Length: 225
Image (cartoon, rainbow, N blue to C red; front, side, top):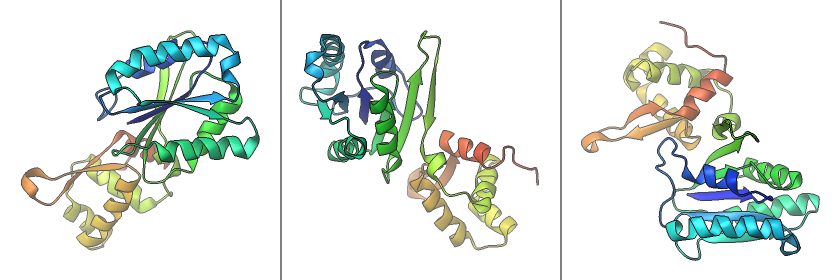
């Protein structure tokens, strides 16, 4: 997992995020990477340096030396976004999971980070932001917002959520099982479904949290059939 975060004057939001567990992610592990997004000339602001050093002191023993990266970026519009996107791509981990903690740092860095994330492909992207009073946080996967709207995908997800097989869903939609399998592979690219292969047999698909969010974006509840 690659964790990216703009750094502000306070490290507590980042530290809280690093300690949380998520669907399919048990927390930070050795080999994960952290990338701090910093404005040019950040060394002149001692509060940013202090926050960054505190984060590095906590994370480095877990992820390993050299896996906490400082990315210094220019504060100039498109160059800001391109520098962040390039930094993410160059430091992407094998699992292609990106956790973006957008709870601190300069507003241009927050906006630039989000715009860079919108241009990533073939990655599971989780965006989180804590409330300033530490009363809670939001955590959303970005893929449901990037996936193309599709009535068929909605029906397939509804069928899976009800425990139906690929063959049963195909019969209901009047298409072949191979067609539904191809659709599921495309949906998996957006992390809307997860495939499991028990004993090496044909994959069984499950709806992920991103898939459930996609259903809500597509109009809410599934109709009973």
